[in-house]
Image 1 (cartoon, rainbow, N blue to C red):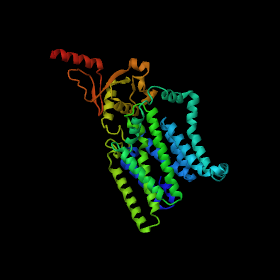
Image 2: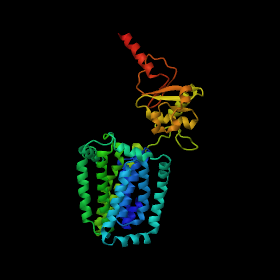
Image 3: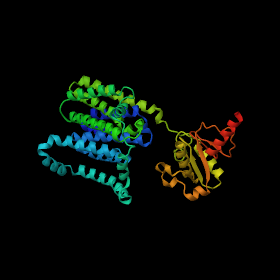
Image 4: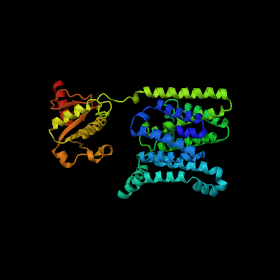
Length: 427
């Protein structure tokens, strides 16, 4: 993004503006640069896609490969980007074509003749990303696309109404005052763009605002017709890019408008640089950027357990000792899946045989961690319970307390029987 920003002005102004925007995004939402949960990982990719695509729409064809890489990463990440990436790409093409509409054929010939390296690299990147999709589709026809279209026409998708969809979009601008923030930033960005001198930077600002508007309309439409649980904001985390891109337009256009006044321009540049450094400092001390290293292997410097639960290595070892070589068959009670994933991974790392009894968890752990009929028949069944479960009056052979679950040999029927006995005693 710094390189893209530098290309807009061929001076530190553009580079500092883009760098400040990246640091602002990191300071506001540090998890998206520090954690590997997929909804967080879409945020920097989508942000980079929008910025690079706006740069291309403004005439900087050299950034096309960045738009191709980031756009395809998004498409591979989640089905919703099958809507966003094509819609934004089409919008960028229209922005490019409109000023050249009277000589469109000549402009196309010039592009393919003079920018061979640009479009060939983008085509090669697209082919590399399309290849696994084509193989998967050929091997499992009609594959995931049938599921996407089936979901879209089902009762689970959308059906929330326009007002809840707009409220959902506004949450990403500011949870309680989204409309005020959107109106203020949007008005400031339009005013700055209007005052910006004609040229490359102004075209970039216009492209950023238009693509940001398309992204906004796309999120409202997606919430209206596609999202199942509209109270789950993580589905739209990638839209955190919208207020930051609006701020980028204000900073970039403002610096360009002040460029003709050297003294004021230097002061403004210093303020933007200082704000970027402050945002970077906030990012470095944010809680989401802290990494669990208490149980790191000195040889590899990698954590031997899941982040945040140092009990995992010893706990899984106790489960293995209890199983005496038999396969551990895990049954889950509600809301214990976060610890389950850590147990499964730790077991795989250390050669402990463990699997999940319920095939419904295939979507999370893949088929390799789902028990076969033989494993269920001959394995030893253990249950994952929430940490606050009351086991008073229950005799158990095993109890391993993890951070977010308790693993024991006690089944739900055993807990019900104990509750019944306690009720009888009280009666």
